[in-house]
Length: 109
Image (tube, rainbow, N blue to C red; front, side, top):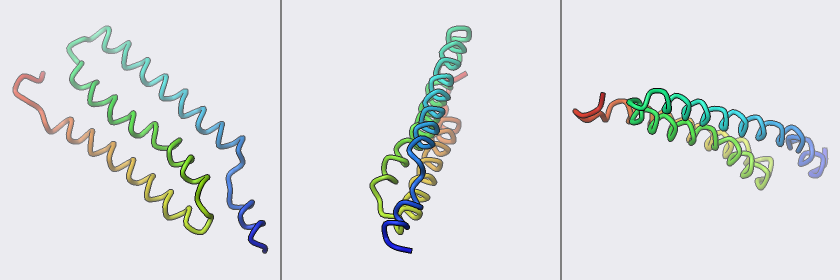
């Protein structure tokens, strides 16, 4: 297999990449809309939803960033870098959720 064949076979088709990023953007929009509706109805939950939206914004926007970086990398280093980025975004978003739940002040409800 030549270098060009390896390069072409290891890339995800652009249509599929666009579809995945579009679905992630739609999900992120729906998530923000749902949070805003909940905050409109239950304003007392604003402290929780502020932390919740931040954590999931990191997670939602992580995949398009990872795909953007993956298109610039060579195939033989892409697997390691993409996995590192994916796990990093997942770790940071879960750490934000954990910190948001543990770091409560006495005025939080």
